[in-house]
Image: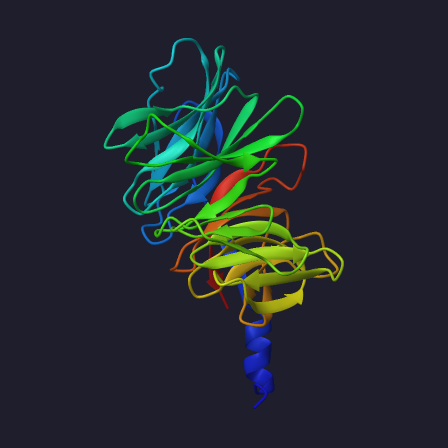
Length: 301
């Protein structure tokens, strides 16, 4: 039965409102990069007020803490990219001696090996602390990487011209090539030509660029929903997701079959918790000339 006019109007009026995540003292602003699905711990980086670089930051209940410098010689910048519900964090150090991925747990850094590279991206972590990411060559090619928590001094190559978009607690991961790699090594290839954006909590978000639709798949390689839009940024266990609706460059929340806007249009989402808290960076001062800053978004009607 269609919703009553009053109920429909109330739903249409629902928006997502922001609470800024503060930068630590001595930093100009902070940027969020990831959030734990249940605990809500947020990670990112803060830009030093003197302009000399950035440092990795973790927010617990909205309070920022700067992570110490990794045990790497020389100066540089640090960023935290992902965090799990156990508080294990992974990120990347960029310094005078190159780039180094790291895992941070129980107050201790583990430096993660990688092939010779011009850049590293860390894109996922599971409950065990297994990390997936990619290294990037000067030529522009990439190589997917897996760092198992049990063997931090080793990495597994996931193949060249690939990058991994997510890993789950079973150890299953998904590649940008549309391949699902199961824990036993078996593989499933998605049946359509799509642009793979994200794998999180058993949900694979892709774009069908020809049809201009967001396509969600399950881990068996089956389509579970498809709707007009693009660029799935984040999704939680219940299926609430952040993407770009048709006809606009601005992201919004897809809640059931309804689109709900952010109160600040210039927003880029970095994750959503199972409690429907969205972590995003947003245009805080009305101009795109300054960098976006971190915030958490919650629904209000």
